[in-house]
Length: 222
Image (cartoon, rainbow, N blue to C red; front, side, top):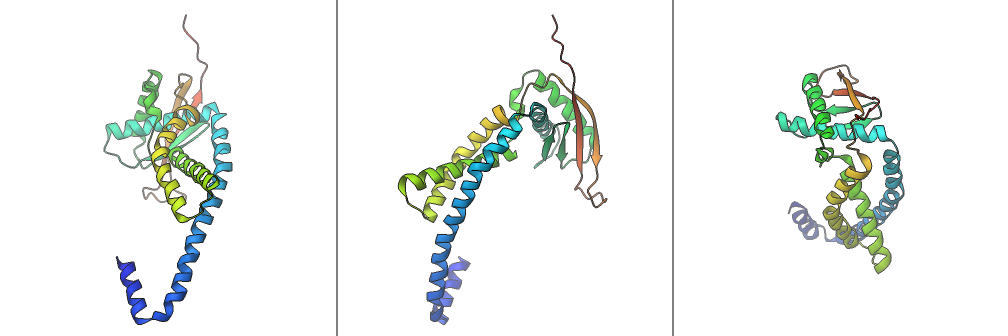
């Protein structure tokens, strides 16, 4: 509303600016789809490689699953919202919780429940995989529309983004389930949890809890 009011005022008081404004607007209509095309091509080549890098590391996938399970349990047991984390091959980080005992309790509970078969705990809607999936879906849809119709405009971009928002969450859950996590955590053991201070050295809620894990031989009982 404010934009259009400003536009009308400019036209009324400075009609000479109409031409440059329209040229700038047309330039944006061309530039935005062009940038989106380049971003789509980048995503199309980079995202599959990143997913493959994660998929071929079993320890990373298991810790990613445990990270999600820990966050899900924390949000079930305590009034936390907006928690996040990330996994490594020897453990995972939880951001947004300063109580180490709560994180360790949730991690052990998550491990126990995953081992019992609660596979849905590996899914978390705020996972970066969902964002990656939406970007990938948007890129694929946009390029398909572009090459099949030859219609290159901001409307093509908006259509691709709209469809990607519908497809992205489902694709994200699929990728989390089968590519970036593994619910087979029976051989994983939680070693300890510790608080890591922010780089500034000040405790301002910017620290994170690191949960260390390790692989142990899994002996099947006879």
